[in-house]
Length: 146
Length: 238
Image: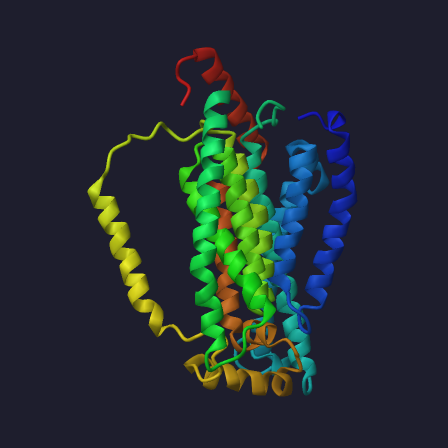
């Protein structure tokens, strides 16, 4: 669909997408004291990117965040999570026992921070990739398709 | 097409209204009765919860009567949003977040994207009574109703999860992990290995989608070429 013909839609999307992403960052960074966490924040970011794709089209979305970046982010998230586990083994505790990563509660704080970032990267990138994949089968959404 | 849509829209509205009235009358006593017994007094949010669940039942019934797939996809999105509200009302905002973002957001967009590739309305339904699906659905409903009394009342402090593992986690999380949100502490620390598995499952599902459908330029070009071939060939539309 032609973005120029939907002024209200494009204006609202330009207004909403940054707000949604800021909210996702809030949900992620406050996940340990308030509801939320990496998974929720990742899903919210994927929603924002999907909104961008719906309004501005698949080509613009792929220019905003290229597919290789998403693929690397999805894989890096799992790697970061598993690597945190290996690090705790390296420092002499069991797999994913964050007490090995610092003294007292710092180890837990650091470990949970790392794995939440990993979950966030994998969830947001994978969900966005799935939306890209399905939307990519349709070159453009015509206006009469609604 | 227009006539069909209008007819089924009006039919859907009638069914929705009927289902709404009946479901609210059914769920109101159930929810308030469950909480006004020996556990806690009926709070205002119990009434809101009853209305939300009634709306969910109404939408489920309406979806089963709808024909345009676009309307069905959007109704499923509304259903997911109501489900998220119900989770938040039942003090599970973490689950509510996920339901709102994944159920109402991303999966609706996936459904809409898939809709562009298939016919837009459900096939004309044959108006005949089919006994086997009816008996199967009735049997499952009977089993669920039979099992329902074994589920502890919502908020029951003496139920098994609340006296054993749940209480243990609630008492230990702040001391052992320093995280006030017990859900995050359990997911990330106590059950970190499970969460690693879940992350890997999501990653694997993404790989499967990419392997089956593809996301690169080649996949888009293939889709365009196939569409052009379909248009040129005529008649071979799905």
